[in-house]
Image (tube, rainbow, N blue to C red; front, side, top):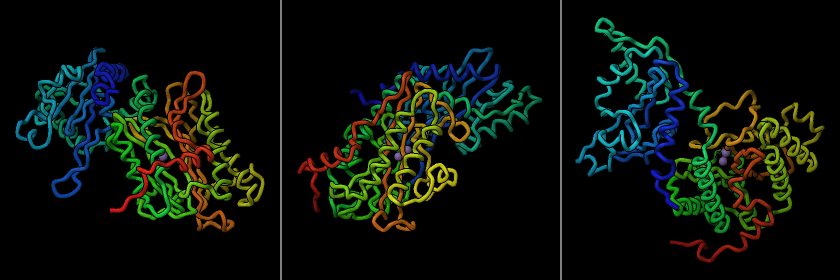
Amino acid sequence: MDLSYKSAIDVTEFHQRRETLGAQLQNNSALLLFSNQEQRRNSSNTYPFRQDSYFWYLTGFNEPDSALLIQNKASSIISTLFLRPSDPLLETWNGRRLGVENAPAKLQLDAAFSIDDIATELPKLLSGATALYHAPDLQPWGDQIEQTALCYLREHTRQGFNVPNTLIDWRPLLDEMRLFKSPAEIALIQQAGQISALGHIRAMKTARANRFEYELESELLHEFNRFGARFPSYNSIVASGENACILHYTENESLLRDGDLVMIDAGAEFAMYAGDISRTFPVNGRFTPEQRAIYDIVLRAEKRAIELYVPGNSIKQANLEVLRIMLSGLVELGILQGDVEQLIKEKAYLPFYMHGLGHWLGLDVHDVGDYGCERDRTFEPNMVLTVEPGLYLSEKLDIPERYKGIGVRIEDNILITETGNKILTAAVPKEPEDIERLMQSSEPSHAPTTL
Ligand code: GLY
Ligand code: MN
Ligand code: MN
């Protein structure tokens, strides 16, 4: 397996995306988008650089302080990149740069300029375009550059410059493109899912009472890194006991207690693509009857939802079935009382299940793409999304004591295919018996250590 970003998606695919996007623009228009910048963490340290997902999608270029201009001129698509110039001294300190001279051939662009020259070059390139496609507020540093260029054009009309008279947000166009994954993207999301699965398996095998949540986090990260996923696709959630009732709990500092469940929601980012898996298991390797009862309801709901994740259905339809299954289960256990359809109408599930059933997945864990009204957009082949029902029985709720502190979420990543779907994250066990078996088979090398 070649893990380098360069080989992950071919440069021709990035080029083709620019062509596809450019062809949707008005004739004689321009589109401007900006990269991320490095973020200061403290002192002279920065956070690890992560490229803006839109910028990556159109360039495959992983440097900060860059801008891309796509022009549609008489239906010919011209791409120009602004990037940091080569600088031997800075490169000795901070790392290699592609350089202006190398960019056109390497990235299949028509032209490249130094980002230091954008104030003078951008107005020349924008002048005469009737429309400018932009994304206000996405990159504040880019908004400033764009405003400066537009001001320049307005103030220099007598010198023959023309300012675009229409501004259009490009996000709806790009979001729609990103929603449908190419074969190369699907391969990477699948790889991200597989690496995420290995992390979860390792965490399950190494869980013990009296280890800390952050120790399980370290097992996840260890496995992600080992397979070339240098970063998680979001902050890992390792939530034991009542902590699982905080949906995005990331403190990960509690001690795992014998008799509690632990819910892990974590994913690897591989070659920019996200995995997003949740699994819930007993700290000591054996579900109690109450934990098992709640777990079985969520598992039943998740499996039914996956059956419904097929072309023509929607998240909304699947979620309605999930609500029916989970509310029937809660009524059977005596946690809720009443008629299931009436309970759904009254939204009686909200104290127990207060998030959506799933979200698009891709370059971003919560990926872009229109969901339709109340998530009723119908599934089509090559969409990728999560399925993640959960039940959270917080000790704050007025429910039988024995169910308090049980939080369960089960989450998988699903590719919609022509005929149905494919589960990309099936490698982590979710059947309770399989989880218990895996946890009994833990390896001595993973046993807790002390310093
Ligand atoms: N990990 C965040 C989510 O599942 O949406
Ligand atoms: Mn998740
Ligand atoms: Mn998710």
